[in-house]
Amino acid sequence: MIANTPGPPYYAVIFSSVRTEGDNGYSAMADKMAELAKSQEGFLGMESVREELGITISYWLDLESVRKWRENLEHTFARSQGRAQWYKAFKVRISRVEVDYDFIKGSHLK
Image (cartoon, rainbow, N blue to C red; front, side, top):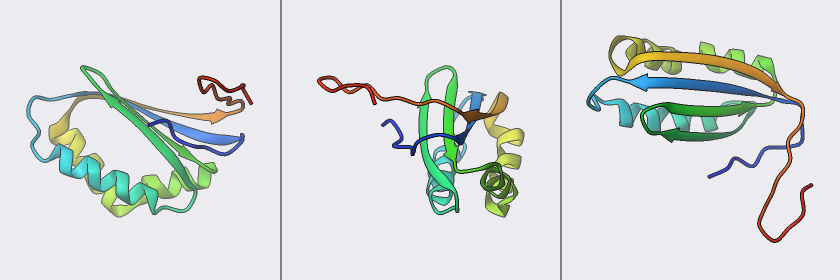
């Protein structure tokens, strides 16, 4: 599902990852973190796909919201578990979204 974000500017946290073999509790924790993120002040939405390479993009109102999410204790624990057992490699990028537009079949771009 494509996240329904407000007009720019806002921030995107892009998390690209390569998983280790087996679930080892990953799916339950990923679901928990998605629900927890939704309850955080400044959270705007999330998109996630996983094949060989996983990409999750979370959208935030401002950098302060991103910082608070990073400092959330449950999220901090999940990140430590990720480093220890769920990821072979990952990269985090934080970008300011300056432009966004939609295409929906049968409608016009906004």
